[in-house]
Image (cartoon, rainbow over all chains, first blue to last red; front, side, top):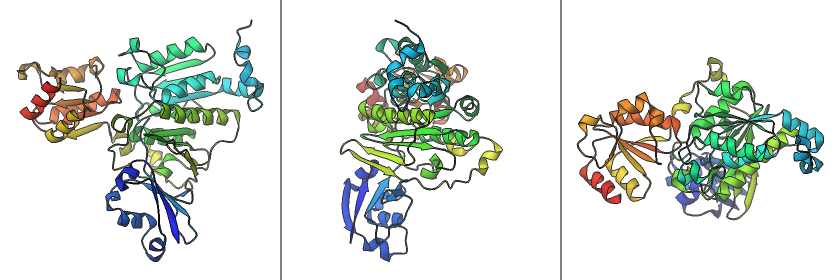
Length: 78
Length: 358
């Protein structure tokens, strides 16, 4: 199964894309958190502050049913 | 023709969601707007236009030329004037039925409670994390809701925090963001449209909250490139706020991201990128032999900080970085511009680069 991953804010620049579809099994087989898996996929996110939203709910973990993850760094501008 | 309040707002009170009852609620309401910049300008304008009785504006900054493209309350002839005074003048010319209260200073932990406590709701139009944590914590302490808004390039966020039982800013951003580079308007760029859109949504939620209409419970995430607009369910209220029992005091309020110590190498990069508009030598007059770079001694900066007119992002230097660091912490209290402190002696290379840039 694949899961849609969306990158917001400066994270889009760090990973070089705004969204992609990836295999969800890597999230399900591991004992790490979904956030840690994303950092393993993109080491440039290490040390960067961000939250994840799974199926439009913040701070959740990916499950077998999850369709979408959004990576959301804090925004500062005003 | 009558020129009373009711006829001024006649079209608005026709709106079934507002009505005369809503107009009365708006008149009785008070809103504190923190920041009168890109988000603050449209928020102040819209709240006043909507008939809010009392609008407070907090901002210690003066009008800069580079503000004008997106901060519609100000004009070119007002450059150097306090934003809060210009904003108040402009609003009252258009709307005589609002009371504007101005605070020509930055929000800090000593004034936050006193300023916020006499208002019903706060609108966060700041441009940095320290102020957002401070607004959040003061609102938690005072049990006031606040309307959060922030932008990054063509994206923005809006949320209503600290509604009883619901999430707060710390539930969304528990840790002070480590990586600051590129997330503010000074460094990442901004087109007027984006803060205007986000600000209007903030003002809308404020008005809805006041008249008793349902308000957003989620974090609104707007990507204006693709119109990918999402409502992300905020986490449950989880932050332990017992630290507030000892008063409003937390290291995050002082983690000043507008003050940064940098090396000659970093400074050269910023100069080349056009990100430094001014350089100030803060050594005493007798120590300085060259007249090519502005000289404002630390002693003058500390005795009269408001006399220093900054032209934008500024690099301060001395011999070692000690005095420039001190000067930067003083000057950053009254500006939203980036204040850099050179943490070593200035190299000739940097000096030449700056002179030739001029």
